[in-house]
Image 1 (cartoon, one colour):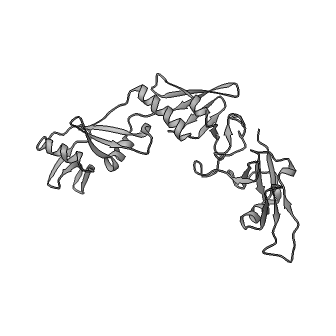
Image 2 (cartoon, helix red, strand yellow):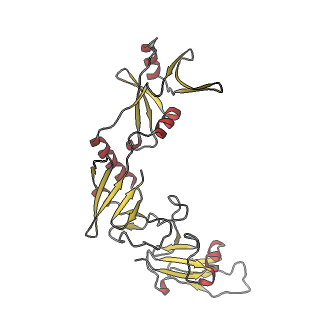
Image 3 (cartoon, helix red, strand yellow):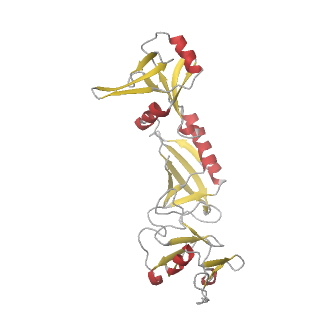
Length: 288
């Protein structure tokens, strides 16, 4: 388990203000006396001498009182060489950085009750390849992984049909033609797991063949017209002359992926992206 070491917060202030000079040989910080050379401070901040190990937390509080502030305020982590800030790209209050991985070096509960507001962890890179996936009766996906001789389940919620996806698809999705079927394709990012494809059925078949050729050869989006006196209307604009209106409730149908495809894409996503997991005693969860 990670240990907490408490220090007065003026050390953190000195670090932020570049008053410390880092010594890579001793892995310690010493006052550089640049701003106050007449003082000639001798103080050296040496966490290793205090027994700090890689993965331990450095907590900077008023007068070094052993009492945590709000969330993870003043909390840093020791990476074996120097102190680094918590990772804030997932949780703005901070979480364990990517460089600290669960598997060979750390157990899943290493920082449990030490990092506030989340239990975010990262797996060793090769462990993402060992996650075994299966569909549950609820159509959600569950994974299983063995870490340090203990089995853990991984809960993954997958929503195949989502109104928010359709809203984004109508705004950002591109039109394409597949076997004479007009389709709307929305890619949230580079991973196929997030791609959504919708078949579009047009009631108006006027000039349909010409429209198909036009879509094949151009980057076409669905247009939206708004009128304060009328509801939104959606249409495909053909050559700036014809409008093919679409009933989004009846003319757009999500092309569902089969389970094998989803499992393969999920596995690809885990291996390529290596997402963070949230640890909950006997299982993990992944937010997709």
